[in-house]
Every structure is written in C-alpha cells, then in structure tokens.
Image (cartoon, rainbow, N blue to C red):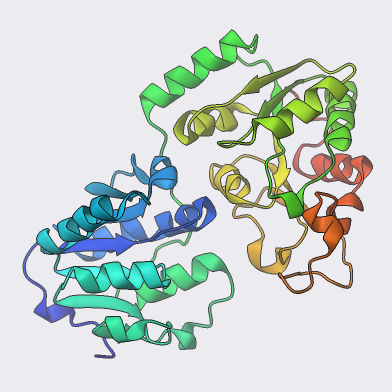
Length: 351
C-alpha cells in the first residue's frame, strides 16, 4: 500500500509512534504530535521512546501515553513486545527505521503499519510511504515528511518541548542551593561528549574565566548521566570564575536551561534540547556535519573547523580521536567560542 487510507480508520483511532534512540531525534519528533492530533480529532496518541528520553515527551499535552523501552532481560523484553501486540493499535508509525523499531511495528499487528518505503526493513510495514518528492534535508524534515504523507498539514515546523510546573519549582530550588537566586545571570557549560568528540578540559576552564571577566556572570556546569568525570577534570582548572555544578533529570535541566543567558556545548542531544527551548546556544561541531545537524531555533551559532577527514566515520577516525584529542575539536580556541558567544549574547546585553 503506497498511500495512507485515512477514510478506512475507525472513529477515535489509536495511534502509536515509535521513535527510539537519541535525545536529539526525540526533540525533533515532538514537532509532529500536535499536527497529528489536530488532523485526527479524537485519536489516542501513544509515543514509544527509550527510557533515557522520556523526559523530552512525557509532559507534551497532545500525547495520551508514553511507553518506555528498556534493554532488560529477554523475558522482560518479551513482556514488552506482548504488550505492544495486546494494546490493539489501529495505526503504528515507525519513525525509527532501525531493525528494532521495524520489528516492534510488525509485532503490533496493527491494521496499518506505516513506514518509509525505502527503509531497510520496509517489508515489515503494510503502508509504505515515499516522501522523496518533499526533498527533506535536515533530521526534522524526514520526520515531518512521513507524517505529511499521511495527509497531515503543518502550520509550523518546530520542536515542541514542555516542562512541568513541578520541575520548574525543583529547578529553582537547585539553583538557590548553588547560590543562584532570582534574576542573577548565569550561563551553562555542558562538556559532555563521546571520547572522540571532546574539547580539552583546560579550555573549558579558561573559557569559564574569560566569560566571567567579560560578562560578570556565574558559570553553571551540567552534564548527562555518567559524564561527571568530565566536569571533575574542568573545575580544578578554573582560576577566578564563580561556578556551580548541577546534575539532574532532563525536565529539571530544561527548566534550569531556560533561565540561563546562553549555553556552550558540543554537538549532541543537549544542544538540540537547549536550542529547542529557545535558549541562545553556541554549539561546537567536530566529527558531524553542521550543515545537517545545525541546532533548531533562530538564536544558535556553531563553531567548527574544516579539516580533511571531516565529517568522519569509523574508517577515517584517527588514533588521537580515540584517545580523546580529536584534531577537529583541538583546533577550536577559547577566542573562537568567545566570539560566537558575542553573536548570541551581545556584550551590551543586560543581565
């Protein structure tokens, strides 16, 4: 089936969207929920993500239910797959396109299992949509394109993130506990990255001191799960800047991020998350292509260095990259970042 049979759906159909993997991908996926619910009034929408990404979607007003997949024992996973089958969805949309997502889609045995016609496991779908005519270029375009081919119209195309009131209150408590109260200006440095994509700890420390000297604001260091050792490398090297460290869940981190003046981080999930929240972002790009993965929003700038092996892959990645000293990041200077900060947060901005 090469078109979506809207006219055959029951009244108040049950939809399941499967979107596994990274936080950045889930951030972009939030762009489709409201248009889908608007196009199918009365439908019930369930979104399936991996557990580490549930904070991105769990407070979205147009999601009726969030399912979280966890890579537990085979017996527990079998129970999860049985639940997918037993919930009797009318329409299942695989927006992951990997093997796991396609198998989940098939297991539901939904009357309409929707996916990209040219996905590797498209034989597991029975509604195969071709959106090449829409000419998607960026990650968000691909997700929107599939839903557009179902007859859904978009008034705007942008991520839609929602932070709970309880998370906002908890974020305020965390900030006050670190001596950041009220309208006191602060910025966020988020050093987390894979080993082949890291900026040097000493440069982060020097950047913190330079930001304090120029903008007179406190430095807040944040990180994702398991990334605290990267922060621990930075803090002993900071000489003058007042700083704090907060490690919390994505909802509370989102509320904290919204209160910051700007964010400096690597290309990754947090960069897309922060930019989608409307916060000025300076994103450092190393191995990925900034032309494709530029953060969303109108107040973001990227810093990158063109070298012969970039964008790289497993075959071109060098030994020094795997040792945590990638050339593409080492070439980025503190002054490069300070200049980029001026673009998103001019020096005459009042805190």
